[in-house]
Length: 462
Image 1 (tube, rainbow, N blue to C red):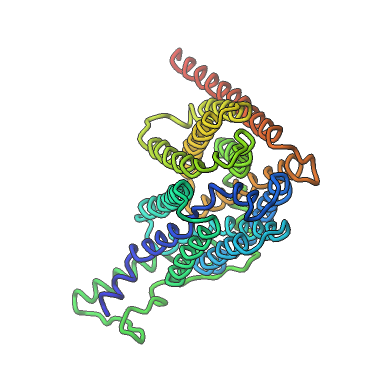
Image 2: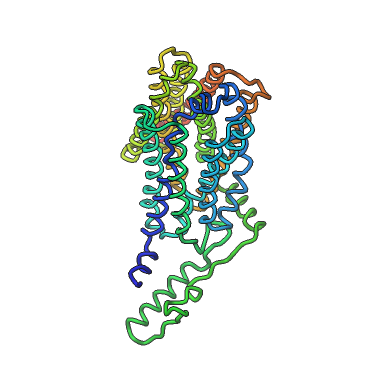
């Protein structure tokens, strides 16, 4: 029993559980084949219905619930929202399997948007249950295992479809089983005592000093340990958790928000983050429709899973490689953002106007790898001088900005109640959008580097 208690109190216990949850909740073999499934004989929907009526709901729902979910996650202390996210994923897969009408598919996209918004619970849970010195390892494990889940799902889907081992409906049943495993795992996650905003630890240094004093006293044999009912130190004597009201939290968030974005460098990196993430989400959401347009036959879809797997692995490799590059990103970062965004625009233009599906696939892999590389740099630069609480705030604010932009683009360009553009005009807009990002940040980067050179020259002359 003591060994079990010791294991449950170790940082590895919640980390392993979260990784198991992250893996099984992201293995979705049907995802690379969603368009063929929806437009095929199983659902018999048209491409226009999927593109202009169903997919836009995800963006609207994600934006509408992002802020409430962000606050509820912290108030409820993460674990209940992780369970809630898995329930939303299960409902999404069930609707996809057992319903077929446009309203039902729109409801499916709504629940999918809620599940995506709940990712904040998954990514911030670990910081409330482990020590600061374990953050980097735990973050690496939890993020890597999600990418592994997406990759395994893509490869598995590719194999099941290529060798005709399962029908699309059976693949969905299999996904429901995997999601049920993730849901069962989530119930064993320990509920943290503290959170970043609502439930904060007061007198953290004092608590540590008290703990050291108790240990020293026990070693000397001159003190008595304060016992709880089970013979362990009374945690309430060592530290206290203060619970703040919603008004106090909102005031604190506003002050932190103003402080963070008063830094011009952080502001520029955040602007790129929001703009590029908006364009990336639009591209990833609608790329299968483009692939179907480039090669309108059922044969093309058997390669979608392989393309997604390759793009995920290459993205992981390029993002990992950034950690070993010695570049002064504070000086050259904005030029890099502009230059690589230009390459992203070129990849999108190539995807849009090519008639070859393999060229289109290759352009997508390059585009996704470039984005993952740049977003890794942006995250590192922004997080370098921020506390974990402020980083969570900036992460949420940048995501909200990206979704606000995405909602505008979706409602104007994609939604049938707006322009309702076909897929080629859509991707022409996305390509031009990244071209604008590239021009803005190249000009900004050139201005910064020119000013830097002038300052260096003048300092040498003195």
